[in-house]
Amino acid sequence: MARLELDLVGCRRCPRLVGWREQVGRQKRAAFRDWEYWAKPVPGFGDPRGRVLVVGLAPAAHGANRTGRMFTGDRSGDWLYRALYRAGFANQPEASSQDDGLVLADLFVSAIVRCAPPDNKPLPAEREACRSWLEAELDLLPRVGVVVALGGMAFSQVLRILHGRGVTVPTPRPRFVHGLEVDLRPSGPVLIASYHPSQQNTFTGRLTEEMLDAVFARAGGVVGNRSR
Image (cartoon, rainbow, N blue to C red; front, top):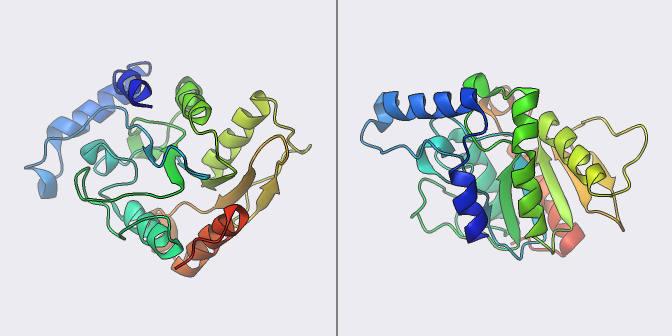
């Protein structure tokens, strides 16, 4: 995993994303003017022996693109890690920097795109260019039995990746609905769909903490109850 991370952070496959992540790192946001932004591709984070894999969309420009750790330093991450703490997958509910003491147990967090995209919208070609990094992580996460996909893009990309790896996927392919559970056993994991904890979803009430808690309670139930 350490070798994979070294290879990943040197990736420059997508010129548009490289330019954007580095521009954001130079210009910064006023609240973070004293930070040295990461401004590189962001590796996955968590327990390499984890049985649950959380897959998001991409690093936030002033979140993980700043801190260098997935879902760390922004409001989406605040929601996610609070939920993981309540479900027993994290030792604390906060995620602010790489040295904040956060430890994940039985769970690994990743994304389908590793560089912050403009407007949080990676292009289809960029999603495909980044696909091999998530596939390489899957090769190094042998115990994964549940994948929680945050958002429709992550859900669709995970299904494409699993199908490409020989997992039997239903035809027609399932469409994203929050709380949908797709059991791909025995050839693959259980896939659970969730709204992304973006401000667009959480501020409007489309996603509540109770809804997110239910997703991770179910994920924990599939692999063995970890609730507090």
